[in-house]
Image (tube, rainbow, N blue to C red; front, side, top):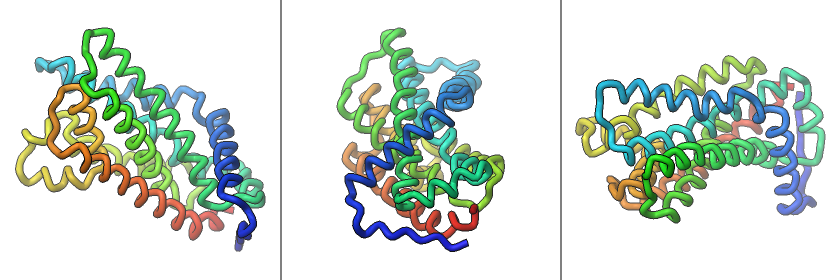
Length: 256
C-alpha cells in the first residue's frame, strides 16, 4: 500500500498543534497505565536495590543514579510499542489518512514519552529531598532532564520503526538495546572507575551524558565538560529523530 502526504500548504505551527493532539491521545490511551509506573519507577528501584546489597552507597550517588534510570526507563517504556498497537488496532490507517506528516506523528509519540520522562523524574528527586540530598546546580539538572527525556524518547521512536504489528517484537528489540546501555553508562560504576577499555564504549551511549549531568548537579562531580554533555544529548536527539522519521517514512506503509 502506497501512502502519500501532500502538506506543502500546511504551516509548521499547525503540524505542531496536531503533534500535541496525537500526544494527548497517546497519553490517554497508552500512558495512564501500570506499565509506565512499573518500568519508570519499580524496575529502576529493584535494579539499584540489588546493586546496593552489601555496599555502602552515598545518598547523592543513589539519587543521581535513580534519577538517570527513571528518566531512561520511563521515556522508553511505551513509545516503541505505540506504532505496533496502532497497526494492530487498525487505527494507524485513520491517522495517516488525516493531514499530518510522518514527522508530526513521530513527534506526537515523542512528546508523550518526553512528558512522562520529565514528570516521573520528580519521584527520585522527591526521594532525595526527603533524605536530605540537595541539588547543587538545579538549572543544569533541569536542562539535563529535558534534553535526556527528548533524546531517550527519540531513541524509542527510532526503534519502533521495525515494520511489525506485534508489540512484543519491538519491545524485545528495545530491551536488547536498553539494558546494555544501562550497564555501560556509569550508573552503577562511575565512569572514572570503569576499566580503560570501557570508557570509549561508554561515550557512545547517550545515557552516559545524562548520568554525568545528574552527577554534576547533585554530587558536584563530572567526567565530561557540562557543555559537551549537553551538545552530545542534543546531537543524539537530532540523530534519533531523523532516523525515526526516515525509517517510518519507509516502513509505515508496510504496517497498513
